[in-house]
Image 1: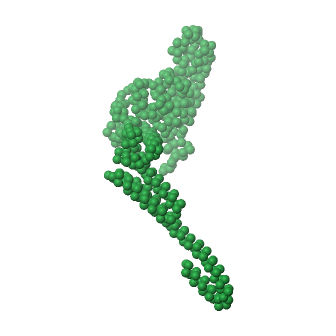
Image 2: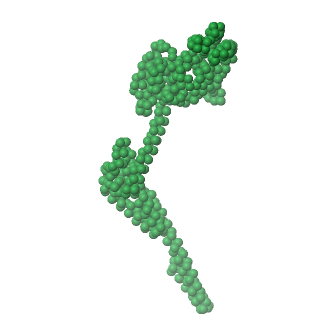
Image 3: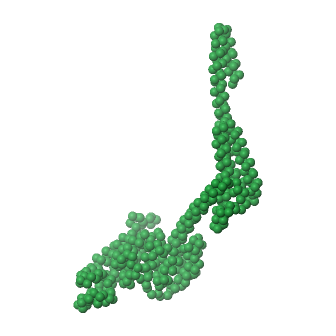
Length: 451
C-alpha cells in the first residue's frame, strides 16, 4: 500500500514540475502528509479485522473447553492425578489462544473466565459424585472431605470454596429430593386414580377371563410404579379375598359407609389400602367397599362432594356429624343411590342422542350435581313429600314448648329419652308418637315412588 501511494505522488509531482517546479514541490509535500494519514488508518483497519477474526476463533475454541475438561476428569478408569495435569495443560492452551488475539483487554477477561471454567468443572464433578452416594454417605463425605478417588480434586479448592461447595451440594440435594417427592406424589395420584377402575374391572370380571387377568396385571404394575404406596402385596391378596367374598351376603352398615365417605371427601382416604383399613375398622363389607371405591376417583371427587352436600341437606345431617343416626344414614344412601341411577340413565340417553359417527353435544351433558338438586326438589314437591313437610311442621310446633327441635328423622327412641327429662305430657307424647309413625310411612312412599 505504501509503495502504491509513493509511486502515485511521484508521478503526479513530475507532471506538475514540467509546468511549475515550485508548485510541484508544494504538491509533493502536501500529498505525502495526506498519504501518511491514509496509510495509518488503512493499516489500523487491517489490524482490527485480523484481530476480530482471531477473537472469533478464540471464542469458538473456548466454547468447547468445559466439555473437554469434564471429559478428561470423568473418563472411564481415569487417573485423577494425571487428569488434573491434563486439565491444566488444556487451560494453558486456552490461555495461549486468547493471548494470540493481541487484544489485551480481551485476553485479561478470558484468562479469568478460563480459571472459572476449570473450577466449575471440578465442582460439578464433585457435586455429581456426592449426590450419587447413598444418603448417609453423602453427609459423611461432606463432613470429612473424603471424595473417594476425587479427593485430590477437592483438595484443589481453598477453604472458602470448600465451604461454598458443601453449602451448594446440600441445597442441590434438597432441591432434587423435593423434585423426587413431587414426581412420587404425582405417580401416586395417577396410580390411585388408575387403581379405582382396575379394581372395579378385576372384581366384576369372572376369574380367568382376559378382563380379569388384564386388570390384576394393571394392579400389580401400579403397585410396582408407586413402590407399594397405592397398593402393596398384602393389599392385592386382600383384594382377591374380597372378590371371593362378593358372592356372599353381607349386612349393610349405612353409618359406617357414610363415615368412610366423609373421610374420602376430606382427602383422609386416598388409597385402596386406606379404604380397606377404614372399612375393617367400621365393619363395612367387601361389597360396600366396591360401591365406595369410585368415589375416590380424583377426576370426579369434586362433583361427588357437591352431590354429598345436597344429600346431607335431604337427610338433615349437619356437616361435621361423626355418628349420624342409622335412619339418616339410610336416607343419605337411598338418595345418593337414586342420583347415581338417574345420572347413569341420563348419560346413556345423552350419548345415544348423537347421530351415528358424531359426538354428543357437550353443552347438553348431564350434570350429576344438578340431578341431585332436581331429585331433592322432586322429593319435596311430591304429594307424599308435602305430607311429610306438613306433619314435621305441626309436630315441631307441638314440641317447641319443651325446647325440642323436631325433624323428619326424629325417632321414638329419641323422644323416649327426653320424656322425663323435659316433662313431656302424656297427651303430647302420644300425639308425637303417632305423628312419627305417620311421617315414617310417608317417607317410605315419598322416597320409593320417586325414581
